[in-house]
Length: 282
Image 1: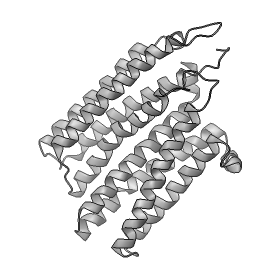
Image 2 (image 1 turned 180 degrees about the horizontal axis):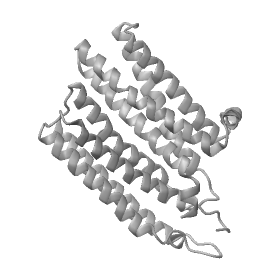
Image 3 (image 1 turned 90 degrees about the vertical axis):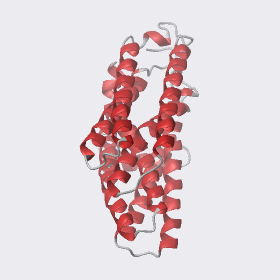
């Protein structure tokens, strides 16, 4: 588990970034879905929480690199280094989405231009999500990461935690989504996430070095996974109950459900970093 503790800044950077991008896309959808200027203004105001979270994410990444100067130096190999591409893509998303948010808040741009601007921000966010996975899935010397389960598990994080935050913020803005579709989607995503985790554990048993087998790297894997999905399912139960009962005035319960699901994904990412070992070494 030592690798997981050592990489806590990256744990928070990756999960927060994925959460923000997904929630941003959901809020943009909500902004598109209404013609009420006051509701749109409320949606824009709710996005402030996303930029706070994104700022925390980048601050966490700076802790990992050691100093802001190293973060700037990491941009020197854009196009050649997966890490440089990730940081550049994150900065571009933060810049484009943040600029769109400010111009929308000030109502500077015509709606048609603002919509195009929003779509550009969404595309930059999707590119950022993709490049986050490339940092880890393209490292052949780390067999526990260099497989299809890394990008799949990262995308599952976005699909699980983002809707809880995004929908909660939309509901607090006065925008409702089709609850049956939303709930069915969330159940399906969590089920797929669990299946990916089981397959990943099986794949780890097939990885071995001269010293250890892959599934021996983290003996705590079973109970950590159990804790992860306990938090996620409990959080989603609260989320489903509050949204199905239309009790949207009490945002505290929706926020609690987000915290529980988010904590579950933090544990999942902690597991991921704890599985780090290099071919031939542990």
